[in-house]
Length: 247
Image (cartoon, rainbow, N blue to C red; front, side):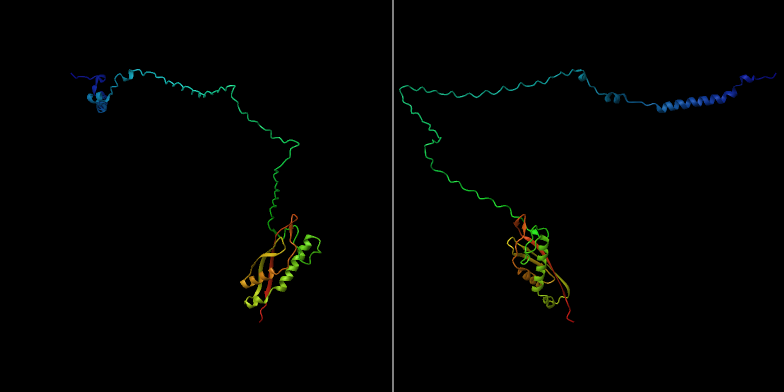
């Protein structure tokens, strides 16, 4: 007699499912065992701080009291005046106050002399350049010129002619200089008409000395005026000449 198996009750087909389920359960239990941590109870107890009942105590509320202001200072006690009682029998000398007003009939004496205050001289005007002077200095012989420009030109021409006549041009040749020579001269015609403060600049000191000597010999002039008052006038004079070679 053959035994026939019911295919519905065949347990071999569920073996894979049972194996996988069991494997999953084991893995879960292993993971939980790894993650499980244990702590020492003695250490846990020591980590807690016993604050006691300090937090339960109530802090009393204090109030800052302002000290009372100091009492005002006592007013100074005035010294009582001593009143002297004078008997009627004593004679008291009275001081007579004389009037200081002068009477019409009285003579006035001891008059103090009044000193006259000298007038302070006005500040002197500084030196003015020749180009901007209101009234130019007048060179002797230029008095007939009526306007300022004509007097300027007359003065410049006369000074140049004077220098050309007096200056020793052969001095440059003696010094061994050649070609065109230039000497710059500056001087002042003071408020009295005299030529002062002569300065010169030249290629050689001997030429400077010659130029200063010639300019200092200029004649006395009528001083220039600024705002109607005599002032010093600054004048610049260029001296130009050319040294010819003898060869």
